Length: 305
Length: 112
Ligand code: SF4
Ligand code: SF4
Ligand code: SF4
Image (cartoon, rainbow over all chains, first blue to last red):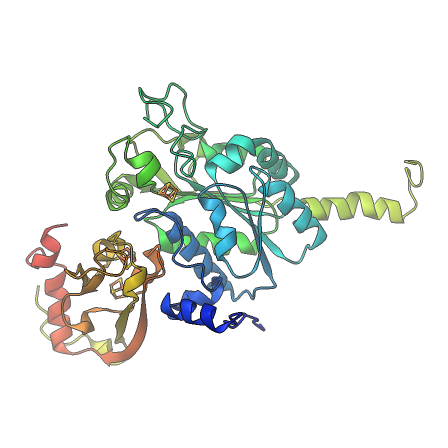
């Protein structure tokens, strides 16, 4: 497959020197990253960089060129991904990554549209968009990085914060249970549901690759450490200690019932591919139902106006 | 455990040898690569980088790295990667090393 990756072309000498000083181009993944944007802003020990590396790993594995894939992200720490990847990326308004991506996926059905966003963006303000995109089975590859809080704005409690967890807005412990994301995605109609942690980078690369092979709404939840917003108030320690916790407490169970995948504070984390079904996606249904009937001159033609 | 001879198919297999490359000034010292390298090739250095973190460095002889690529996949900062240096023939020495490495006698793995 032909691959088009942009060479590093700085605007001016100064920018070139700065990019070289920052070491751009030294790492093999740098050709997928915008020159001069690395180092990224994520905290030391944050898991978002691992998820980005795994996403690039999946692009590399599938040999996708920059024109075959587009990334849409919302607001939040995870939303920064759109600014770092050197391809067609959209950094949309808060919670609206899925509506933008739906438009893109319908207008350009040959492009692999990935939605890369956080739990706060996809499930708090954008929750409705997600469940309806899953119901319609729009061809989107959703990667949701779950760090159990709103990290960028100062560690407030979000829809995934587990019961009893402390955050900056729940200093005495959260009184609400958090969402079980794979269960929600499964119930809404996603055709592929998986969950991994940043301790499982190989499986994550494989899972993202698998989701690219499928046509329809796929959902991958990645549990990532957030030592700054979630780890510190809950005394989970540094990013490394959270990674050790994932190593000790995650249980790989393929095909498990997503209803069992609830996460409790310091509890067990069920990971694996929970669901891999096949269902005609929105484009296909639209083509076979609406367009075919309209072309056959059937009922409804010209009556709408 | 001791092998009394080389495995019969040792001719057709080889051991990849990786060369670890660290872009020190990108490292934020999270320690993921150091902790999770399956061959425990890395350790935290005493040096500081430009950001004031301790980047990783190689511990033992460079041939311990088998170019598995986990460090580059798990590094959040795009600061470490490996290149295949050679695919080396399996010798008796390697067999001895492998059989002792994964035993509890190896000090490097005692802490885990
Ligand atoms: S606040 Fe949390 S999620 Fe955001 S960059 Fe820092 S560690 Fe990562
Ligand atoms: S490539 Fe594998 S063996 Fe080599 S340093 Fe990295 S993690 Fe360790
Ligand atoms: S994983 Fe990357 S950022 Fe973390 S210590 Fe290793 S080289 Fe540094």
